[in-house]
Image (tube, rainbow, N blue to C red):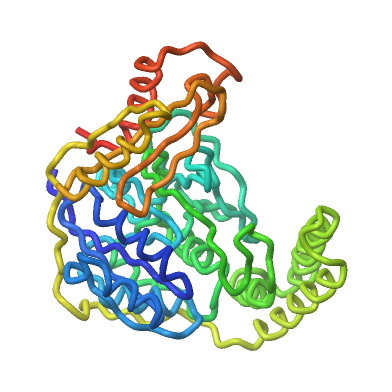
Length: 410
């Protein structure tokens, strides 16, 4: 099956180091043809331009604190038939696009989303979810790793995450892209709701995986503790005006505010914020809600014709490489990994100690994947707490576990 050209759009603001890591990972995508479009603030532009492969990607400066408007800038520049989105604090698995786009082709859907792994590189932050008519998200039961197609109903539609989703470009044009009234938060939820109301089915693709760091920004700390709820309040006000009947809005808002208050109190009790921060956060939430009531709403502006021709990334043809090492040989394995990455290979290092430590995985800034843990420790968190392994067999088992997301699917 001929693969459609894909544009990967990455929006970045205030996180140049994270952006560099994301771009390094994206350059290892096992997909052809695809291009990368970066929409970033001055620090992000400088970081992207400093990378050795900067000439292969499209870099666009944009310095407004509005993720929806920035994504629309990226869509305007995107020349692929499909536009995929990943956050600047995330790294996609090498087969991300292959699985995501493959599900769209096989199931004749226009939007798709995948699974998102958290900071330990093993556990999932998000899997499949759906949205109610009030914007409430609920888990979508998924058994196995085959794509699941969600057909919208008047009461529910599929939910994709902005850090792992793809949409046909012509549909984004018809929909007007993202609504710039959502400066931050609910931006992809709004698009999901509009796609659902238009009757478009969505594929949830378990093997299309992204590792998400949840890096700090102006609204949350690195430990995910919120520092400002203004934009959350504003976005909910916009959402209500677009999707919730007038007579239901007050009760809906009271529920949202109570939920945010409970979250703030839990953080206070846990010692993450001071008591006075609870009042300040809720005050900012209310201020944002007031502004959102008067923000201009409506779809953004997305040009039917891309602003520039497709800028194809040179395809990767070498198979994935796996290096197993005991803790004592970790330095040597990492050195080998760095050399092989420079030769154009996609490399995974599995470092095992004689312990029962749980496994963690990450994409290293030097361009290789690294998984560390005990020979007897859990990787899949659903495993038994302790199991006897020999080094070689455990290494092989871990390679088999990740091969379907690290190797190009046949």
